[in-house]
Image (cartoon, rainbow over all chains, first blue to last red; front, side):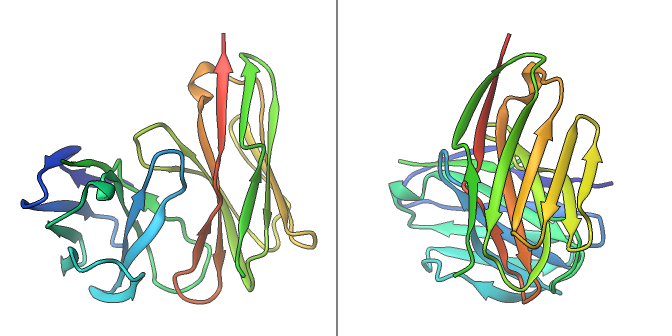
Length: 115
Length: 112
């Protein structure tokens, strides 16, 4: 199984809502990532979890709160978002957290629209 | 500064034709380079991954090359199909930490 799943596929929320994005993989990967991608731009790294611990936080606003309950799951909690946060949110995983020739596997993404 | 550049920014070709996409990078120390295909609104899918010692790697109609001396890579697509229409992203990984550096992508459109 080389699949990363993400739910929901689409999400529309108001600026006062609280919602969560979910990501799951069963490949035994110990590194998981959240990316944000705007239209016609490459993905931008938001967070990296390594062995269920947050290892990289790329100065993301606190209205985005990641959570890694276990090695297979990664959540992104959203609160008080702004319209400019509308984007495709991608989850990815890889075997290990360090360098090396392993591949990042991406999920299909969640298309988020903030009204 | 670690950077990845890609050219052309966009490309339109007719079905059945071949094309080559370019990737130049300044990432150091180099670990590996990957090419991804991304359909609009979907997650990227890995096509190839190349390490320092590899010059050429093929995956079906996709052939990637790597010149570690000049820090250049190319992705050659043979006998293009309509389903090849997508963005192709070059990603270079550093040996330090979680540093995946993404290129801006090349938008390929294959017309009938």
